[in-house]
Image 1 (cartoon, rainbow, N blue to C red):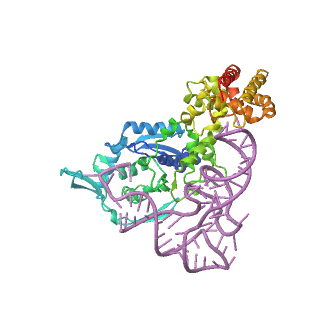
Image 2 (tube, helix red, strand yellow):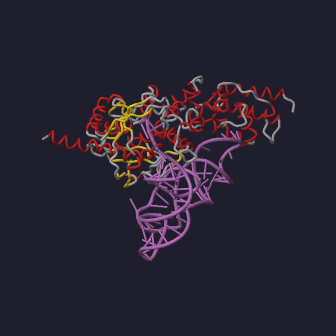
Image 3 (spheres, chains in turn green, red):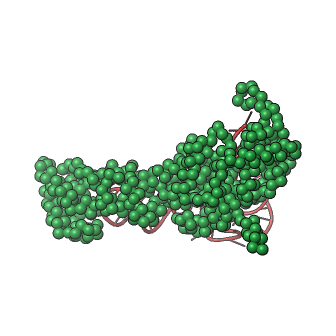
Length: 450
RNA sequence: GGUCUCAUCGUCUAACGGUUAGGACAGCGCCCUUUCACGGCGUAAAUCCGGGUUCGAUUCCCGGUGAGAUCACCA
């Protein structure tokens, strides 16, 4: 009885797979399929399988397979089972033989296509030339007349199965119930259904996802500059942000909230909310979304992520500069791009010039006096927080002219035309360093003739 | 070219017969501000076209147009 109940449960259990082929570094468009399949499986308490489609022995490379595994691991997309298609060769051959024996496939001697002129034996599927109709969850009924498909090739030899045969056999044996894949597979589906019928397999349910497009509205591809997912990892994007972003290409839960954690996405994901048309991959929006996730990270996580790109910086400086760094980046690797201009003065005394020290409506004498005044205020001020510095310095600045006080102070500290505000810099530098930089500026001004 | 798929602001999208067609990114403007960044507020911007069905179409149907995918001894 218990067993029977268990079987009923198992029968109902959804099985979904992600089936990439390791013939290159996969990009965001490829993994978007994995995200949908994963969310769907988890949402429904089903099984999620990773199957490496490596039947093409020439093009499949171990390093690409490893990159897929690494990427999924980084994205936190966990799977319940892992297969390589090549490991199931015995079964492919068995089904191939069966098809041939039953006259549903045949061996055909043909000249090799590589122009070598040698004769080869191929296995072709005997096409029954009929209408195939299947019901796609996203697109509804799709009808194709398979006549013009001809007797298509399903294996290069009895021991070298090709895509269509291998997919059908593997999906059946792994109990796959739902096939979520890119829209580019729609034309393949009728062939696979034909093979399923010839083998007496049940039909899985299909959901063909809209494509991820590049700027020119064609399918996203590596040669159009699409980066492998691991590249986003390496430049300091957050996996949760990537998942959030990928989920929102061609899917939308309605409502105005856009920032979701993976767990939240699992809860609300629904195939009926999937878009039919392809969607252009918008890097700007990804950056924005990543920043939103960045802001939500814990202080500790932010710190260790920043540290990766600012390894030569003192921990204390990073900690004090953390909030302002977070404000200025949308992904951690951006630190590399801006650190020379925006942060380097924090660890390296800037070169300053007398003329830049003086605010446009001011003069040398007033500037010197103001910097001395600032030094005095600072000496009586606790530098334990930005607010404390600001609260103490602001009254002085307001009395003597904000531009006339704050500009020279900021420039003395940073040596930059553009930078974070002087209160923050004082806080990051702390008293000894800040004081010396201001004193240097005063000295320089005294030596300058204007 | 054959077959298949799709069609709302520049981009991602909401709407599931009745809305001043909503939001987000990007853009622009203003505010905040010594500068930059952040932030706040605001603004502009779309239903591909033509027929139906209906009291009423972004929404349903048909046709056109446009775009994409696919037509391997790749997956």
